[in-house]
Image 1 (cartoon, rainbow, N blue to C red):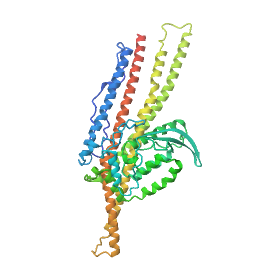
Image 2 (cartoon, one colour):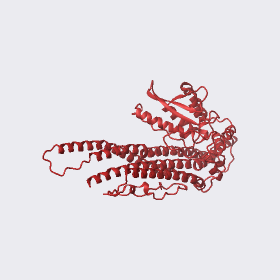
Image 3 (spheres, rainbow, N blue to C red):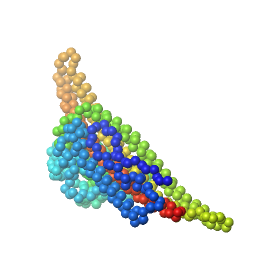
Image 4 (cartoon, helix red, strand yellow):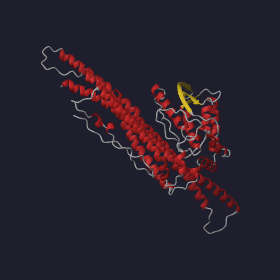
Length: 510
């Protein structure tokens, strides 16, 4: 019988804890659904027609993916205006898609489609960005340094230390730093970079690293997969906020060989840890001048609570999708393995029956070739599930974790502010008596601390909602849409080939 038709696909419709403009839901596209493989056994298209139809469908699917990506970009300006009660600065919508680098032909590498341009692009040029760095007094987190445009990670080598074995990778950047052909970095070095980017820029989304795996860390397949993940991490870091690549942790990471790198790390850590709330607030106000002028959103604590609940619940569902997709991929491995056994058994059965001298007529139809063709076609199924579907949810789960880290940083700042408010409130005596000179000095000091942490709290709240949440949603949607369309095209290709295999079998039977 004919395969059962599936329903048309839609973009994810999970309710958000904040107002966000959505990309329009695409109309039903018959060429991307299973109706495309319904056929009449007596009217099967020729191989040339089938290939032409598959090519046309693939082109249409690609165009649909591009259209969805463009629609997501087009809604960002509207999303900014609606994300927090319509407070967004309209000047951001035009500027944010211009990446502030000197050369527009910057090469990006990685296993995932290019992200949306960074939401932070308020400055029109690299020189203007450097001016904002110069305006900061004694910043321990930023320096002009080397402007990296591309990164390559390769040449994994197994190394030994007192604590055990590990793998190091050659890190090469473009343009090159004079007298530094490449530096070697191990996984823990990337962990250090990500941690201190997060400490230097609280409430900013830091791209996630590939997860640890102690049991498989020296296996060649895992090393290759980790290398791709590290490459993707670096690509995302250099393609977004310019202050990432001009941060002191990043500049040290790309420019110093191992011994010097290990020695200098403590200096970077000490400087970033010593940043005051006032210095951090000043830095963010300089880096996000338009956002800093926006009004504070109403009920920020409630908004953050809804955001956290959304991310937590999404993580559970994405984990379930990841587990199920991984299981399907494994099952397809089993099916492919058993498909060879099926064709082998059919060959043996034909041999047995053909060797039976008293065999009655008619003989069994010879379907060995058809099953061999079927087995050959489905060999791509496990790879398609593991390389596309599984990777979609694996990356999304990592990104959710990274966004939750942003929320936790905000919560820590909010907690310090509330605690400092309580401390200042204690100076007001119930009986109305005056404070002593010592108490007045202490109160002045505590009020200054409260002003500083409140300033940091306010700019972090604005940046988180007006920049980081929008970035998280945009890159997640772009990645999902692009990868799912790739999966659609691969399934359509297999469906077309299988339709031809079984239709020819029906013709032979007739």
